[in-house]
Image: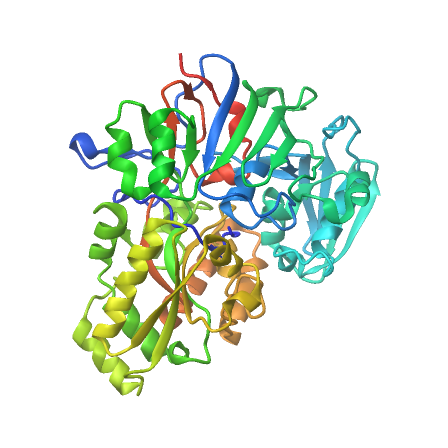
Length: 543
């Protein structure tokens, strides 16, 4: 999935170190020599139009239903098709989207004034009725949306004018408003939702949104094709390419070959094992962009061996993060000090370094870790870690964790599952049965790090292991009720400290986002904002 998601989702990103910056939008160069690179939010602008381009995904989307889209592949496609009330920009700022403004007249109310004259792909005009239907669908238990918990404090969604929608809350909720720039704020035609029913967003079905591209065809197992929407409202993002075709290549070596051969014009989340090869190929350019993600180990079972904090601390101490980065990411990466990456702190990035200086450095001490396991009486106890061929990094990290665990006396067992089964772990509680640990890529969809830490609240959908801490929950509510960004940021740091101390998620490493652009194309945003920003609209001819 994704975030949320910020969420603790999977699909480990291509990893190169960001050692000189705490700001997700930073543009400072990293390193020297031929391996140096710069993190920037945009690639060079396009110089002209294109009739078509082919884009490579590492897996086929499991849905194109905005209410179920909780991972990189579906959101990468939908970012160009469906839009939200607010919009996250490539440099991780929030701006107006389908709403021209938003107001918080009192702590229990959010009011959205809608953009006039916006049309869906079938030509009908967006109204407040469509917004109400779209948001209420997220809240309906029958939908089973992983985003439903974002609306936990909403008691009513009301049409309060032809182009005005009001959300009434049971308690202050700043994060709810920010998530209107991600999947929770997606708007679909109410009439089309009623017409499509259970066929909405499935292979062979359609969606009817407002984005710069319309879904033309989904041939399951083969490709998804989008075509430019001639009636798109935002003239600054009029598509430069007429048709975008997505292909799905799970094997990383085969995916790399699509880039080298020109079969694919580009793709996000470049296989880390191929970064050097692609950068030296002369077939295109690898760009590095802002990222809110960190590779973590999420505990799925607090009733088993990892339910003991001493065991979680021991496993964290046994991880040789520098060698993990070397093996999984070509030798370049940053050991993670917290579950949320430095790049997730884009709300007030100037405060990031100060916050992270307050956190302890990751400790690598096998002898002390083994002593902790013995003290906990956990020697020889089992820990089941799920692995998959979904990305080569997963297997590398899984093998490293197994070796580390066995060094300190834990019986770490690997359970291999198919890529689609791995993704199911993040959306289906039944898929987690019998598992203790999973490798995740926890990320924010918005610039606010509070989004990441909401998924560790008691009962949240993204709290995969059902970890519960009343002190943490109370601290979250205080942060979420803080209107001032500075106060909210400081309160979120308190949540981060609790998470680092209690380790419901064990941090491993963090890295920038990556995108490969073949020599004939340019213009793509480079960072994780591509999950919601209409990135394909800006891609065009490189010369």
